[in-house]
Image (tube, rainbow, N blue to C red; front, side):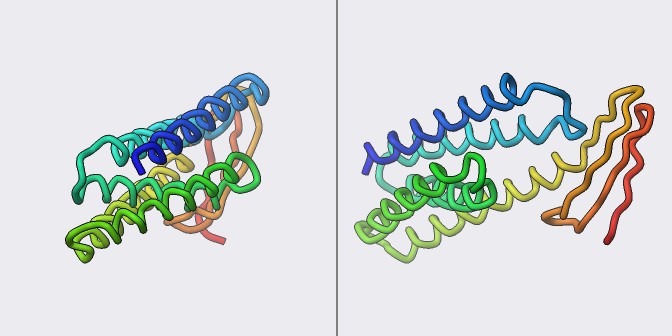
Length: 174
C-alpha cells in the first residue's frame, strides 16, 4: 500500500508539471482570470503531497485521512477536468480509493478509520470548491483590451464579466 501512494504521488506530480508546461508554453497568452492556473497547479502539488503522506506516515487515522483526501481530490478534480488533465487523475483516484478501502478494512477500529477518510475527502473537496470560487472571481483586465467571459460559479451562482480599458464590469445572476 505504501508503494501505491508513492506511485499516485508520482503520476499526479507528472500531470502537474505537464499541466504547467502546457499552459505556460503551448497555450501562452494572458488570461482575464490569472489565478485559476496557479490554484490548480498548487492544488495538484498539495494532492501529490497528501499521497506521499498517506504512504509514509505510520499506521493510524492521519494516514487514512490523507488517503481519503487524495482519493476525494483525485476523483472530483479528475471528473471536473475530464476533457483535459482529468483521465489520469480519475484513474489514480480509483486506485487510491481501492487502497483506502483496504486500509480501512485492515484498521483495528474501522469506524474511526472510515470517519477519518470521509473527513479527509470532504475537507479536500471543500478546499477545492472554495479555491475555484475565489480564483474565478479574481479578474484582471489588461489596459486597453476588450474581452469578456463568465462561468457557472460552483458555489455562488452564475456570473459574467466584460473588460473594457482595464476595468472589469461584473454581472451576477442568470
